[in-house]
Image (cartoon, rainbow, N blue to C red; front, side, top):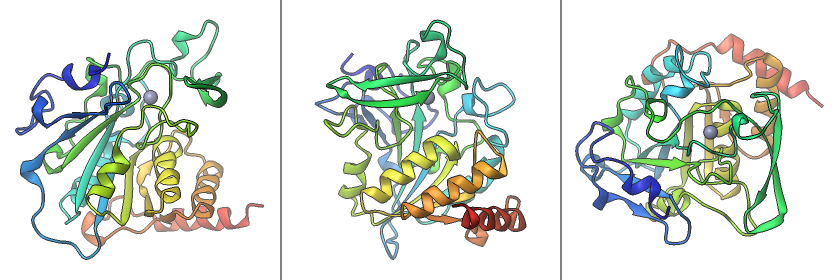
Length: 288
Ligand SMILES: [Zn+2]
């Protein structure tokens, strides 16, 4: 199992040059943790402050019309994200949910459980006293299926790295940094080391889904001391009710995340719904 994610990944399956097993590093401590590295597209031009763009889980299973866990409007994010990927970031990193078929987050693994409504309490495999209660989902992003692939609309050749998460069937990992356990940490992805290696100061986050993987990645990034921005209008939530969006804004804002509804103008205007987002922010500020 030690190299499941790395060695099971056929060379070139992502459809770009430069990704070979030799470019893959696997955590010595935790199984199945891999970074796919694409050296040849690294930018040479320095940016003012080392910044990383994280493109979260833009995968077939999270996008309509056929995704197993499709987020409404998810596929349409590819346009502005591709524009963002053309900008001069120190690091451009995409993440993928990359689950074994018997992953703990799948409702099918728990008799009687219903996807979206049932929850399950997961214990730290190394510490039964540390637990996380999480929502159960339909099976999604299963290794070896089309569902885990990044959507074809995404300009993957602009990426420097792809980071996979959720490969250990025992634990859930919404955050791109790894599962939420801290005592001890389990199955971390190596993202933090990668950011530190490149002296990254600022982390900017877009993608899917706003209320799960984007949010938890942002909360972790802020907690780890990165200047963190979530572009809420380049992200889509599973629950797109105004009440949920307002609660998300407030939670991230209070955690020190800069929650932006503005984007650099060269990212295009098609998703700039500023009146809508200003209403959400007003709602958030009125929350107790
Ligand atoms: Zn998942």
